[in-house]
Length: 386
Ligand SMILES: Cc1cc2nc3c(=O)[nH]c(=O)nc-3n(C[C@H](O)[C@H](O)[C@H](O)COP(=O)(O)OP(=O)(O)OC[C@H]3O[C@@H](n4cnc5c(N)ncnc54)[C@H](O)[C@@H]3O)c2cc1C
Image 1 (cartoon, rainbow, N blue to C red):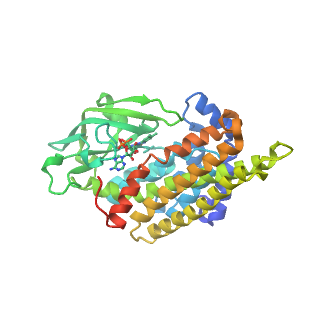
Image 2 (cartoon, protein in one colour):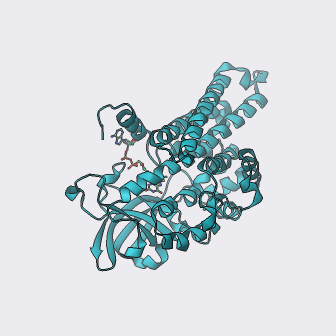
Image 3 (cartoon, rainbow, N blue to C red):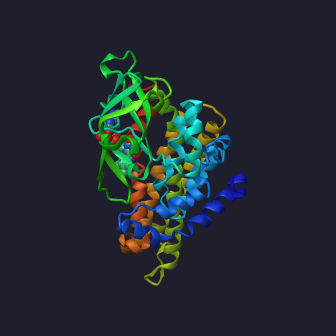
């Protein structure tokens, strides 16, 4: 653990911001132009120990709290960088940490912490199931000593930048389980070992997000590749989602702050009709409103992270934080677009790039409609819509 990792949140912010200064807007524009993975940035984050933040010290990580890990990604995105390029290295290991065997923890966690092993790929979503994870069709058939898996995943991000692939598959058909959440199992797959059983094709998207379809054809895995018990994968998944939601919420928060800070500065400097455009209420009010909503969303993020760190239930709070931060960031993105006028769509100013990145978090890792449905059902006790 580097000394900066053991200090206060402010010091984490300062250290992360200093690292990110080496990767300015032109770096990110260059990556996007070439559709290139930001390898140098991810390596720098790994080397500084930030991506091993949530791995306990006994397994080689920094053993930071979730609140501290949230601040890392918030600051990354606030600087104008894109934390989505490496955020999964921080949280995907949660299933191994919380539900893996001691042997799996000793084998994988220290190497994930030092970056020699990348576990960035997480295969949940399937073309026919979409948001309805319980309806996935990828199936792991029991054979002596292990399983043979067949199926298809979509939107597996950073698959080509990963050594390991965390995969969820059905081990009992949907129609045969007593409870819909049963019968799903988590596997940790070594991509190189899988060889031709795993094939991927990239999905071209509006942003520089390295995401893929993955075709699984007679993939053989052993019992040692299974995380936890057979049939309990969905429970394990739900368990690790709170940290994912809150880390992504923090990226949205960082995006929102980037928009507000840059829009305020631009609106103060840019003179039209002989006065700063920021003197006009049509320009300044949307920025002020976005700022207030970001501040409020931050309180929910902090509350949820504190509950998580205290080991208390925080599902609704994590979902609400994800919703509120991504909506506030999107509001800030729109306010920045207004302030920057034509320059909002000029690549040079980075607003259009951040605008695309901020928009993604209203869709993934869970669409905001689904958050509304869950809050309506589970918090307010209203009828189920899905
Ligand atoms: C760039 C990118 C990266 C991603 N990375 C990963 C990854 O690494 N691993 C992974 O497993 N997945 C990943 N995803 C998938 C992501 O989690 C899904 O896109 C998301 O959960 C929504 O699922 P869907 O796209 O199938 O939409 P659908 O489920 O088809 O939904 C389409 C629309 O209908 C709405 N809708 C559906 N049902 C309801 C309902 N009951 N009530 C109200 N509205 C509803 C949704 O909110 C959405 O707006 C990624 C997606 C993107 C775009």
